[in-house]
Amino acid sequence: MVGKLLMRGMLAGVVAGLIAFAFARVVGEPQVERAIAFEKHAHAQGDAPELELVSRETQAGLGLLTGVVAYGAAIGGLFAVTFACAWGRVGKLGARPLSAWLALAAFVAFMLVPNLKYPADPPSIGDPDTIGYRTGLFFLTMAISVAIMVLSLNVRAVAARRLGEWNGALAGLLAFVMMLAVVLAVLPDIDEVPAAFPATLLWRFRVAAIGVQAVIWTTIGALFGVLAERSELLGKRSRHTARGASPATRAF
Image (cartoon, rainbow, N blue to C red):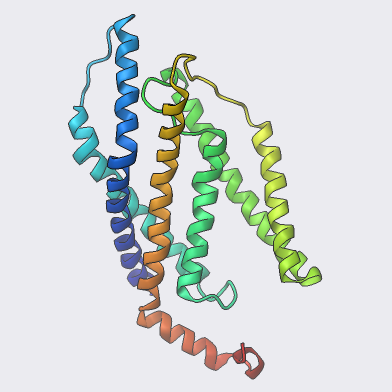
């Protein structure tokens, strides 16, 4: 089953990459061009700009397309493996709801939370000497975010048994927000934005960067759910589970 789901996940990832490429070209690339123009203007008043190893046309075209499609395929494959591990172990969720919830959780844990503390920066921002440090902090925040989400789900499960499903969900959400707030407050800040850099441009670039990820995860969550639902193996597994369940369980 995992092999067939993996192919479906990669297919969903490729489609997500194509859609994300279109989004990035329309929404993201204009902000990159403006940031590069700002950088060139700054260099005109100081040191000479570095020589481009790859042309902007290639970066914004074939390079961007190749990058997002390859990224989407890889993410889609990992998503399919995660789905296969979760299928049948998280209650009575069907393929589409499970896929949607997994995609939402992944987007929040892997992208939204790290970007709240260490958002993406356009060209002309950031010290080249701190790239490794900033990258390490970003992935550290990602790992902590995943751990906090897992802990919050455990809190929700315990609270749900004592207080009911709705109150348990609120307890889990509250635990997630509180732990996350403490971690984000403790992690070191990084502020390398030049004072003269346009605030509106910075905001639009960061929104576009998160938007690309939102497009990828939304497409994977929606499309993979449809593809997985049509999988004969999932259907057989569901029927087998139903036959093995008690009459009281089947009623639900």
